[in-house]
Amino acid sequence: ADGIAGNCPATLFPLLLSSVGIVVGLATMMVVGCFYKVTEVSKIEGALKGVLNISTVLQTPAVIALAYYVLPARFALDEKFDNVTPEKCIASVLLGLWSGLVIG
Image (cartoon, rainbow, N blue to C red; front, top):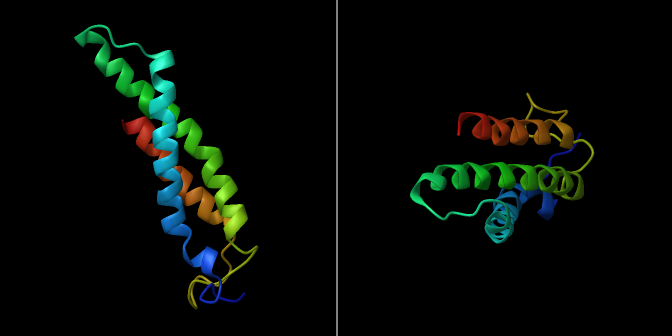
């Protein structure tokens, strides 16, 4: 498999992932008020957990769509990792995303 050096969208995948995360964060903040009303101090923790839940659920399909859209079907990162697929990238990102939800 070839590398991604000549493929601008694939090279920018980490930056695009962060950018999509910002958009998802904004969408989460618009939606969270509908589901988690904070009317007293004791409800703040529940609302923050709600933000984490909503953003994780929204970010999951965004990661999948972005990876399939910008990454080639197979590519090489170096000599050792010469058979990388979008699915492998998706798995690593989603493991971190959902681990953050479980820990948070």
